[in-house]
Length: 237
Ligand SMILES: [Zn+2]
Image (cartoon, rainbow, N blue to C red):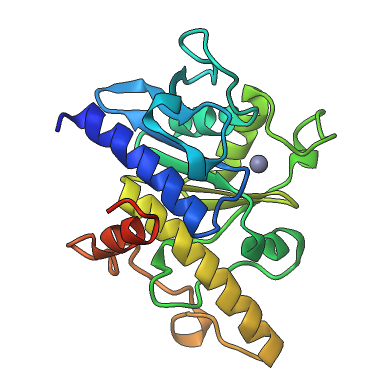
């Protein structure tokens, strides 16, 4: 497979998997930077992720606009454009509205790593509030490249940012890593909420409450066995 063919195939798979795993529902989206063309990325036309097929994939520039006239695209494509423009290290992005993480976007309680696979959360999870930096707050949707840039600035070097009362963005360097981070984020959020209900709990942290130096790569399986597992569950193999 050439690199572009592989990315197109992985992008369809990531859409189907994240739909199947209920990280995405009717809404939300996944994108991938085009190999060898860092100024362009692929994103489906406006369609629910679990239904996405290769023929739905459209090409966009880092201004968030499609490179050619075509079918209707997602309103919030600017999220992807602005993060790719700000982060050379990022090649995959998911924007989702997963229910488990939403309470942490609203509460004084920060989302913190509480399970062993959540090392990528150890550096902190910033929360972006569209009311802080945008005149267009009627829908909370990221409808412009300026709003996208504001979100990308809040994300900084992190792997995840929350959008208050809306959802999250998750970034990665491959389709398996993106899917892994999205699913671990969801599980971590559910475990943290359950632990909070039990009473006092200790998030993962170092001695004397120092931040946990979780290695984001420590639990990446070298054989991508979780990618294979999620493909199976999504009916892709
Ligand atoms: Zn959204």
